[in-house]
Length: 121
Image (cartoon, rainbow, N blue to C red; front, side, top):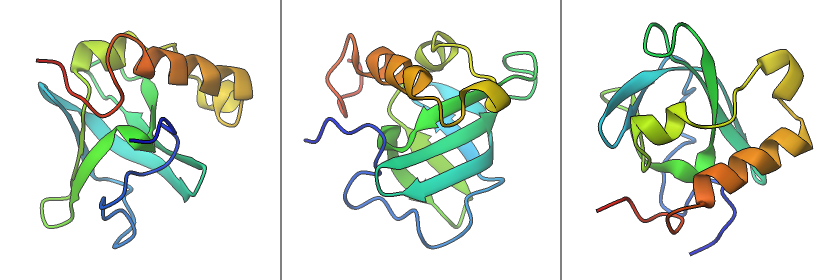
């Protein structure tokens, strides 16, 4: 499997609709709603508004974490836990969106400790 965490996986149907407003589900529950997304081939991501879960903060999720999109239910599923998302480097849209160093830090965070695409046991 590819290690490019900034590209959607083969077979994930992300082009059928605007994903803004879709709920995002980690392996162990909801983490928020998509506020912004990109489907650029090598720079695909979701900006997720976590609401009250992380005190109203946003998180940046690389698109490679998405395992499937359910357009009927307007839900996106990712293969990381809520704790893994919460432990990611802090994201501030104005400062970090498009920032190569922050992107590298996120790649390292999400790829460390478990193989890409393989959920924890």
